[in-house]
Amino acid sequence: NTTYEHILTSRPAEGVALITLNRPKALNALSTPVFTELNDAVAAFDRDDAVRALVLTGSERAFAAGADIKEMKDKEYSDVFKNKFLESWSLITQIRKPIIAAVSGYALGGGCELAMMCDIILASPTAVFGQPEINIGVVPGGGGTQRLARAIGKSRTMELTLTGRNFTAAEAADWGLVSRVSENVLEDAIAVAATIASKSAVAVQAGKEAVNVAYETTLAEGLRYERRIFHGLFATHDQKEGMAAFAEKRKPTWTHS
Ligand code: CO8
Image (cartoon, rainbow, N blue to C red; front, top):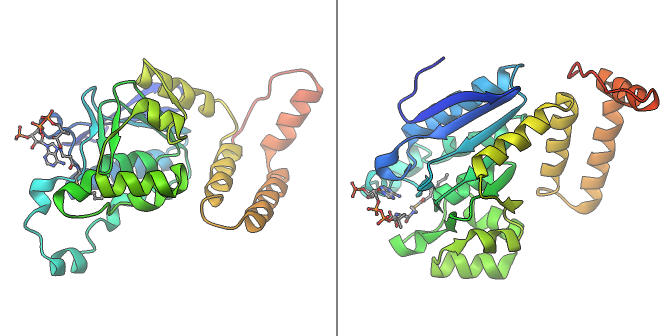
């Protein structure tokens, strides 16, 4: 029940927490105060056993139009270096529970990067993605060059980063950046989260960890890691329950442990 200034939080479905970026006047421009609240809310939901999946969204007009340029413009190198500017902006990648980005409108610069820090991205047909930092004399700083390159390949990432051109929801889907385009993006993201929340939480979290390893290591290492995680799940109640329920032709009752 914490009250925040820049975000809203709610529980729209069983096991699902929703975080809505709420700086409408600045098209949800991102700043350290926004991330302080976002990190706090995400960490609290990650700790809360009643929550098994998260959804992050913005407004119809903007998921987030990037880092707050007005706030950044007068910073000096020594400020950003000494204060580790941006370091706290990627903490959401550290949580165990899956987080789904529901993107409508602008997802530019840090907004696109924030969406890419989530585990799944669903896009409204209105979504406009881009890494336009080159237009203000910089480059992406929140993982844009790295996560985009892994998601859509070098040539497209290079073109987008160096020209700063925006791209559409259809392009994002075509390139595999988003899992799909949906007219009712928030409703659908909540439905996906609710489906995930209905599974064994321990298996879900193991699955998230395994998929994320695919981005960070070689195929051989990744396969070994996946096998270990698979083996490890045989130590859980939910593996016994899930397989017994299948054999007995009944629905499993998860204890999420
Ligand atoms: N920063 C600060 N204020 C912003 C931002 C922003 N990124 N985007 C929009 N706003 C403000 C505008 O200044 C305006 O405020 P005001 O009414 O006080 O003038 C208000 O939001 C509405 O915006 P516009 O009037 O510009 O609305 P339009 O519909 O005409 O245009 C655009 C919408 C195209 C989205 C336009 O606002 C725009 O180009 N915004 C900037 C996009 C951009 O360059 N983003 C990248 C920023 S750099 C960055 O993100 C670095 C990332 C660092 C890492 C982050 C890790 C997560």
